[in-house]
Length: 292
Image (cartoon, rainbow, N blue to C red; front, top):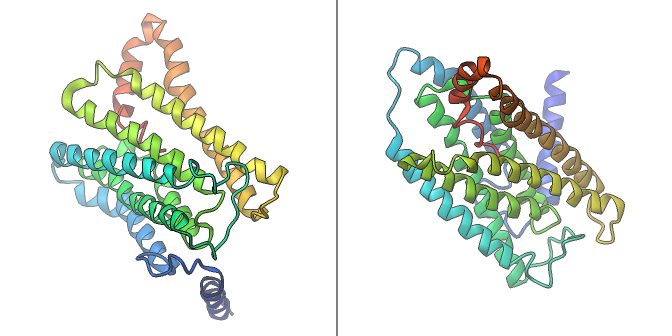
């Protein structure tokens, strides 16, 4: 019985991809095959949650300062370039709608194809983002691996793969555009911090978290727009999923923001709690922003 159910679900998934996936991008690597994507996510989770920490248990932490500096520069250049290129070919174009952008697999105009290739570049960056957690494991900073951190990285790879296969160039595009901007600023902070400028730019950390809250707040409204008024016939189920997911992410980030900045600010006003707060803050300094 179980074997028949699994076989049925596999066939259903195969037919879904064959009949409804976007033919404009089907030829690109890591698309049109959910099993490969799920296998990569499974390997990522297995490494960061079990095998990686176990392998590092009796080893000295790796010194990855230069590697991470290069990584941060690559992220800044890639995210900022894709943000500008993607914005020009989507929301700065008169053909693209802020309020209701339909799913149209037949639209292969030059402008739309540029938008799709920019979206694919964004999709590839979600795999690159996974290295954040790998670096944490190799440096034995396991206290920085929170549920929110792992859930966000794994969930983004899965979610953007679905977007690329079925919803490319649609109303969901706004998520990628905003996310690219936030990541450009975030990785610029990481690089500046690694150069010894942390004391001078410490205020960036709180501002970036505020940017993330604005991001999720706006995206909640963005998906709510097509739930309330849907002239382009955007799939309501997808809009509702985007709406609830961004409420969930906003709530988790706001909880983090409150505990990290509001509650600790109040504690710092009490002299007896300064030492304890400073120690706790040190462990979360580099983990708190790896999540947009």
